[in-house]
Structures are given as structure tokens and as C-alpha cells.
Length: 226
Image 1 (cartoon, rainbow, N blue to C red):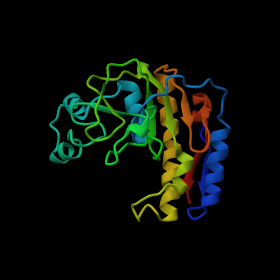
Image 2: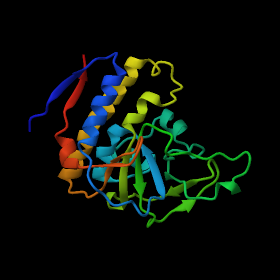
Image 3: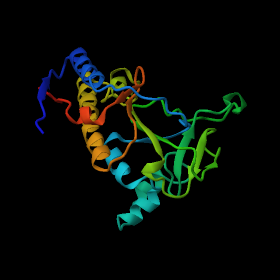
């Protein structure tokens, strides 16, 4: 398979955005709405292929499968007082709740306010609710199989206007580079879907919901900074 390489000016955000947008829309296909879009798990783009192969696990189970102990940093970061994918549970968020019942001091997690990928998980899973940290958090004890994934959502086009708190990432050149990296990660995701014969919709949802054809994504041009 021959991949076309295209250079992108590291200071031209408009060029980068338009090239990526055109490429993504060229992969658009007709799709049906996701009916059970209820539970979301946020994940780094580069980790999606691994999760498509093996499923979702708690951090403790991941370390066990890797034959190692959790590091002190991991224990602190993913303790059960934290929200995202705790030590012994997989954390999911649900936006289909009555948020008018949320207390004044309660917080909620918005899975849409991110540049990372979201895996939409079927509601046909063994799940329990926990409002210890967030009003809309749900926990899963056991592995979540790829067969229980309803879709993979990305927000690549959102990177240029995302409200970063990290001043380094606010630099335009860094944002352009990040957008190109995330765009190029899509190919790995599409390849994994094809190799594992997974019929899971791959979508770009920054501005509107665009369902991407994995076969076309694999053939997308590769963008690199010049």
C-alpha cells in the first residue's frame, strides 16, 4: 500500500485544518445513528488500537497482565479517589441523566469537552453508579470486551480551538503538530479495526458527526510538518 506524504507548513494553522478536514470528509460514509450511546470512556488516541485488540481493563488488571507492579505515581494518579479508570474499576460517564438533581457542590464529567477519543460502551454491561467523585460516574469491575463497543469518537478538528491550560500547548506550532499526530493515529485505529474484523463505527465528531470508512482512512495521505 502506497501512502502519499504531504508537507504542512508548521506555522500555517489554516492550511493544516483545511487539509485534515478535506481528508476526513473524503472518508465519510452513510451511517445509522448509535442507539445506545449512553456510557463513555475517555482514552488517549494512541491507546485505542491496543484497547480494540484486548478490551478495557482497570489499571491494576493492566499492570497484572503486563507482569509488573503499579508504580507509586500510578497508585496516586489512579487511586479510587480519582475519577478516570480507577485502580480496581473502569470509569464511565453518562450524560443521559437529570442534571437538575445534581447538588450545588457536586461535579460532573463532560466526555465531550476533550480532544481525546471516547469509546461509547453498550449499556448491556454489569455496571454500578458512583457519585463519590462525579455525579455522572459509573463503574465497571470486569473487562469490557470490544464486542461491547458501540463507536469510537475522535475530535481532531477541535484541537485548534480547544481551551488548553498548558501554556506550552497553546503555542500554535505545537497545536498544529498535535493535530497532525492525532490525524495520523487514525490510520492505526482503522488498520486495527480491519485486521480484527471489528464492525465498530469510527467517527469524527468535532463539528458534526462524520462516520469514517476504515478502508478509506487507511489510504488517507500522511501529513508531516515542514
